[in-house]
Amino acid sequence: MAKSKAYVSSVGFTRVGDHWERSILDLAVEASRKALAGTRVRPQLIVVGNMFSSVGSGQEHLGAMLASALGLSGVAAYKVEAACSSGATAFNVAFNLVRSHAVDSALVVGVEKMRDLEPEEVSQALSMAESAEYTQFVGATFASLNGLLARYYMEKEGVTRDELSAIPVLDHLNAVSAEHAQFRKAISPEVVGRSSMVADPLRLFDCAPVGDGAAAALVVGDGGASRTKKGLMEVMGAKVSTAEFSMYERDDMLDFRATRAAFEGAVKDSGVPRKKIDALEIHDAFSVVGALSLEAMGFSKRGMGAKDAKAGKFSRGSEIPINTFGGLKARGHPVGATGMYQIAEAYMQLTDSAGKNQVEGAEHVLTQNVGGVDTTSAVHVFGRAA
Amino acid sequence: MTIQYWRIRDRYYRLIGSKCQNCGDEFFPPVYRCRGCGSEKIKDKEMPKTGKILTYTQLHEPLPGFEAQAPYYLAVVRLSNGARVLSQVVDSPAEKVRTGAKVSATVRRVRVDGDSGQIVYGYKFVVS
Image (tube, each protein chain N blue to C red):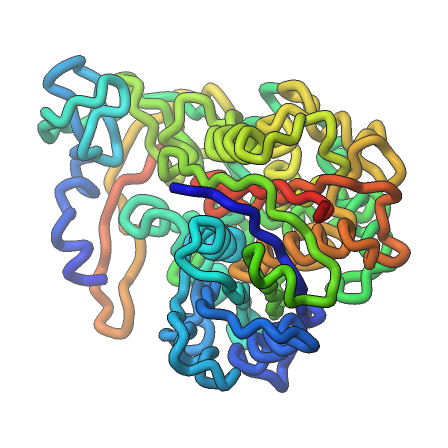
């Protein structure tokens, strides 16, 4: 495959949270219009990242539906689904089609409508990321799998409650100044440790919230890049990887193999040395998942992810800040949209439009978006356009 | 899920998993291909009914259909043949549900399915 350069030339997104008055299509259209505003690029392809519109809205066929709503009927349009990594996986498809010259430009939209469902219906919908016959069958929710993982992590690696709370605390602090975040309120480790029990030892504030949202990006090749006036971010490397389907089938449950392979592949593809990555947007759907992700990518040694976070290694102003707008815990986690929020946030960092959340001098940002318990992982490396 | 359940009822009642005919590794849930050696020579095999808890959780926000049982214990059980099973742990005092605890498999009612009231049975584990 002949590769050429590809860029994100603009992004658009809604606030994450409760959008009672708006449909899944309303959200996707808002994010798309913001991404397309002021550009003369007419995308040749629309890729929608979404996990459960069938359950959440009784709606499928989102690609053609969005194309029609945007007045772009005629273009190729389809949905990509990979559970909570649907957003970045959709982006990966579009990026590879642009850089292989199959299309000149593509609009990628991650969207999820979760709040029309009752909480137990959300739980049921998320559990579809796991085996219906052997995981859902025994009454295991997605949160409970992460509870099993959290206990295993704490017992094996000697991780304390306060250490596990460090990533949620960091996320909430970063979200205070993030206008699109779902929860813009700082919290203490005590608040995390006192919150209601979900799946022992995981508590409510270990878990990303339920919310609605949509985030979009316009991906262009060299041709499209010359026709855009907004800032450009180069997509430097990408890799999607998968692991054995269910966490409990793996010999080493604490080894996030999908993330490790996706990280190594994306970094190699980018040609950017690990040391030159200035910020990370990681997939902390649960506190334990954030910690194990940092370990899988080598930013923490084994067993040290939560401890390093507690010590301030990933806080704003540190050498390698994470979740600069609040991550999944505080910016929010509208599942199929999350990977596209991460990419939009990388874009803001690398075009100096991150406002109070700007990481000064950031040249390269890495995003990691996970489906299941690290069953699918989609990693991208971005840089400032030369 | 009536048909889906009927199709694999033996796996639920008797813990029928897989045995690799090449290297002898055993798995539950069943596999199409050996995770150890990659062989596709796989046959059904009834799993041993005892093992140890690798990790556990007490779930306070249940999956729909399981409300009457909440809060309930889930565990990853390592069976005596090395296979790992995700299962509920029932009929066991809280202080005994611990990492490393010995457990044995039993058949229990899993839930009552839908308005038709079909009763679904399957494996659960008990601290032994």
